[in-house]
Image (cartoon, rainbow over all chains, first blue to last red; front, side, top):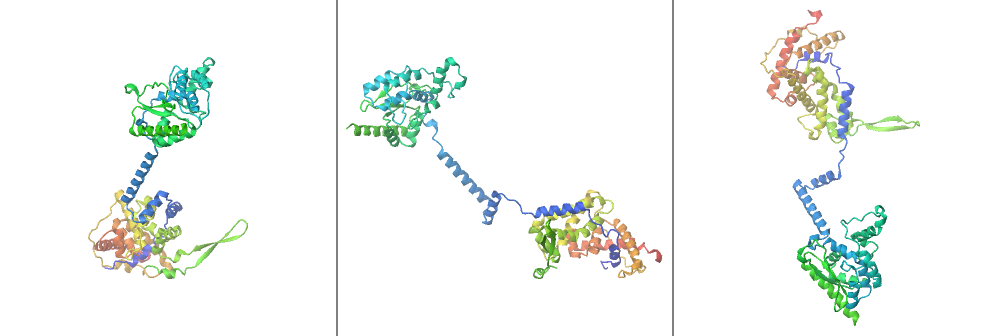
Length: 289
Length: 231
């Protein structure tokens, strides 16, 4: 049997639906769809990177491995840049405040390396709230009496409950002095206007651990900050209580002794303090001859 | 038959004039894609040539639409546009898998997509899709003896053929969808049995039996139609 019938074929050619066609809307949609599909795909930098890696026959597992290595390197870099954890040497917050509160007295003490008697005299003439001597300035000299005059105003300032200074504009007129003293007594305030080598206890410890005792001592000598350091841990292990230190001076050199308050003294810190002191003593020997 | 690419390179480039507002005539050079075969045009479209697709579409728009309309029949005529549009979009979406093959042309692929989509609609509409019944080989030529010769194109017979065509469409409505599709692909669209096996997704012998069944039924149906002048 012939599978093609010419009569049926001719009848089909003359069928009334010969000119049947879709509407313009259908035609437009199809052509637009194809035109949109023919446009090049917008690829982001990540897709282009992945495509280029595929060209080098890099598998997905290898790409994932590279990504993991990159993340690990980034984390290591971030950890390396970070400052050492504060838990290594815990500084009671109040001691830092107390150290900054005595900045003027410290300034005067550093200006003229005092003898033992003179140093004791000045420091015992200071406030009712004994404080840790503070290293400040570029070596400007201050008369000891100025320090004694400044000290009471500073000493009367009570410890602030928070680090944020009170806005001066909101203070009552009668308490201007107290507000002013409170403002000045915050850790941030003591760093204002103090240029050069001004540092708190935390900064001192950070400097010892990062720069080393030798470099820090040399810095202090160049700035005229002659001192020796002494590590002390709080009595009873109470790191949150302010340390009360009696100002001291070294018997041999006469340099004031700055107490480095730490809750736990790491061996590295002890070593750096020792190095620092050695450099200072060596300088004293050299200059005293 | 794959087109000879080398000879196709000698196609003429025609210029479309565009007159700008300042009366300067600019010419846009357009490539004459009519010389390319379907397979070459499809390959160009895969490479990003939207104009190649447009030409492909215009070539096959009416035959494909007509085929879908006839396969779905009058009852599902409202879904012809949907099936037609879906077929072309499916072709665009799957262009990444297109590659020129010696044994399957673009037209085969296009009609295969359309047929599958149409069968889905028929099944969803609860229509009889397949009835591979036994056929009776009708060797009788009596109906055609009274008909004008199929090769003749006399104007006085045009009316006869138009009415015969309408009658044939009515007879096609009575066929199962797969037999109807087999008849249309072979007679209307000129596809061979090998291509039909891919489009209909059936074995070679199955396609042949469906075609025989369709012819037998249609002859019986059309045999009742005789030109008024010959009754």
